[in-house]
Image 1 (cartoon, rainbow, N blue to C red):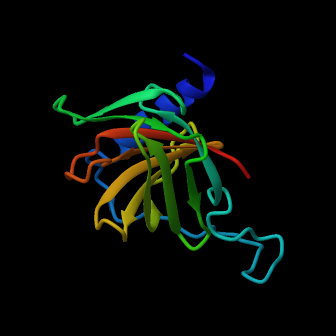
Image 2: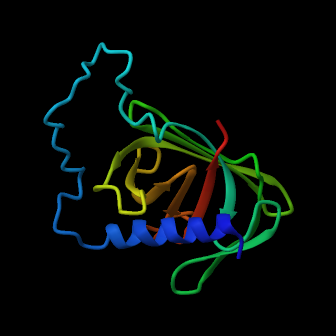
Image 3: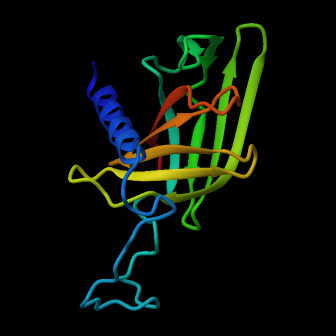
Length: 177
């Protein structure tokens, strides 16, 4: 297993553990303001919110496979959704205004397909000791929610690829810029 695959697996396991019944508010983090904050909103030394998360990320992993490989996508009960080849140009964009844009480029070896999803994201709890930040994505396109985590320059997410209400596919993205 490569270092990137290990990091994605760790990030996803932290996200799923963090989203499975904590005693905190699942709708957002409980962030207390710092007691001696020397910066002000107009201070150029004060970073904007989510500066560490925002950016463009490119697809690096689908379940246990990499872009370009044929991947069997299946529901948690084992029912096969399909056999797809995902393009490495698939991307996830995280914006400073807490919005996301997901574009999955893939094919079923007969025709090229595109899945686009957009919506809002929010931090779903405090960062772990490893620095993983859990996220909740709320799709404006499909009206559902899914979980993810950012760890360093990696974003891992569990996604409902076939739209049946069950999170069935893990995607890993690496920061491109």
